[in-house]
Length: 126
Image (cartoon, rainbow, N blue to C red; front, side):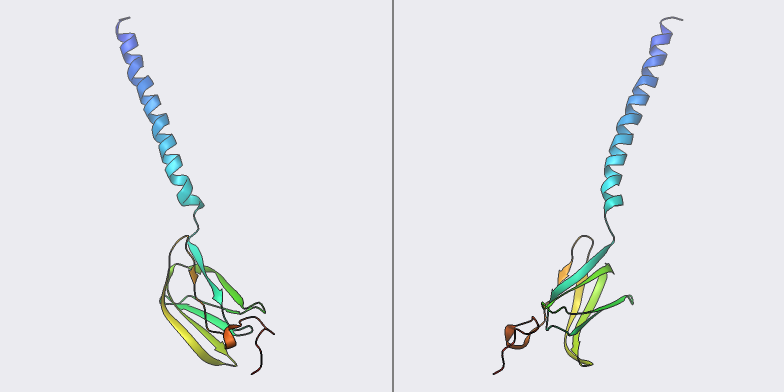
C-alpha cells in the first residue's frame, strides 16, 4: 500500500497546479474586460455657442453647447451608430450621419466655423 500512496498524491498535486494555472489565466483574461467601459464619446470643434445633438439608431440622445473655445465633448454615449447635428438659433446648420462608436474609441466630428475661427470673439468682421 505504501507504493500506492505516492501515486495517489501525484494526481491531486497536479490537479491543484492545473487549477492554480487555470485560475490565474481566467483572472488575467477577465480583468481587462471588467475594467473596460461600454460607453464612448463624440468630440470636436464648431462655432462657439452652437448646440450639438447626437442621436443613435437605438434612441440614445445627448446634446451640449459648444464652449467659447470652439470645442465640445459628448461623454457617456452608448456604443452604436449616431447622427450628429449642429444648430444655431434653433436652425440645424449641418448634419453628419453614420458616426459609428465602438468601445474604447471616440469619434471626432468637426463642423465648419465662420472664417475658419471656431472660438468666440475670434471671427473678424469683413
